[in-house]
Amino acid sequence: MTDMYDGLIIGSGQHGLILGTYMARLGLKVAVLERRNMFGGGLSTVEPGPPGFYQNPHSINHFNITDSPWFTDLGLADTVRYVTPRYEFAQPHLDGTSLVISRDAEETIASLAQMSKKDAETFRDWNRRADAISNMVFLAERYSEPLAEAERNELLSRTAIGRDFLEIIDHQPLDLVKELFDNERIQLLMLFKLSLFGTVLYDAVSEKSPMGSAVRGFDLSAGYQVCVGGSWNLARGLHERFLQAGGTFINHAEVSRIVVDGGRATGVELSDGRSFKARQFVASTIDVPQTFTKLVGQDQLPQAYRTKVDNFKQTAWTLFGVHLALKEAPQYVGADFNPNINKSLKYNVGAETMEDLFGLHSQVAAGQIPDLVSFGTGHITQFDPSQAPPGNHTAYAWYPMPFAPGGDPNNIEAVKADIAQKVLDEWRKYAPNLTPDNILHVYTYTANDYHREFTNMVNGDIFVGSFAGEQSMWNHFGYRTPIENLYMAGSPTHPGGGISGGGGYIASRVIAEDLGLTPWWTPMDVRSVLKAATD
Image (cartoon, rainbow, N blue to C red; front, side, top):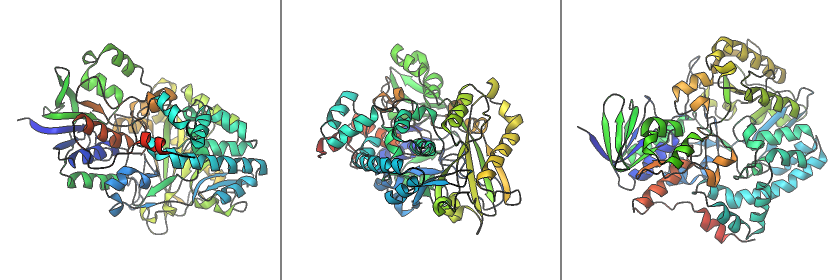
């Protein structure tokens, strides 16, 4: 017999669980289908080494999660706890100096002034502007279906803050940072901060961003948080809410085909022969190529949409992860210069010049393992001691790497141990206490590992789609498809990859409205927010 549901959702990561809960609380019979054994997707916490040392190989730091509308709507604060660090970004230097960005503007300005009083005052001015923009626009745009470019520009142009935002959007972030700041080390830290994900993202800084990513270099009103107990705890909380809403979770359910009948999605077939029917909708929270090339079939698509699928861009680089179990936390050089350096959430380590940084990215773009070792790092056990045995710590490093060095992703295997050692050698220059007797275990996790574990991370793309300007905001892939009752609700949609829950949250409203159902929640509406904005 074929099981019948009102809605079927492919993928049980953040987006699938959020969408499933909103739809189930509308009274629909909803099933979330997961290929793997465990729910959560990139919300993963594992114990790969000594007992009690927990590593988060994918998502580690979560951006402004407790302010997201779905976190409030689903009552997650009751079961999922977050810590918000005071010191968010830091950058140690081999000459003993350091930079630290605090949630407190005056602390940040004082740190920058140690390098350049002029640059510190520039930051003061731009922080004021960025915080105003972030407070007015950020949440509303992040959790609303994007407006058309012309309408957005018209609404933003009605206020001084909106006009300021439009001016910033018109700048390429890299050019803006170089134009505003004289000190090269401050430039590097600003690029690290605005890149969002723990390492400098070349495509986030070298192209104009309709999202206004440059604002993130300067605002302090929004920032990263740590999920207590590990990232999987957020997945656990979402899964609980889904089940409490009456949803059905089905694991070991690899979808092999989305059934399309008369131009309408009517269900799915699994690789083991099982099938499920959907009365009202099917939603994919996985990647674009797999959804439309493998599961739907391009012969089911209009030519224009087929071209859109073919042209969809993946992120052109991956991350090589090195995760440590430690006796004691890293202690960075530069603590005498700024004692807050060892209290930060994320660190920019390695590249100390712009030439170094972009030389690294040029090699990655050419498919080469980079000569320079530069990475984003952190040790979240200082904020959440539960992720290591008492008195011990964990730490991670994310090193940019091509997916297929020399043309083959398997080439990384023969050199994986050597690369990990290179990372440790460089790391030790900046944190001298990372000696062999301090390191209890080293766990490496590469794109060649995670693209097999998570097949939606095509070519090792942790964001499931590039953040390039032609794929963001009004250019995002879209929630609705040409096939009736088939929706996209994952990271290829606005607001993109990373832990935001935005794709699943926004798709909930889209699907509810298409089904003629009245949302039980109050959906975020950027149009109303911008219309109501005043100077």
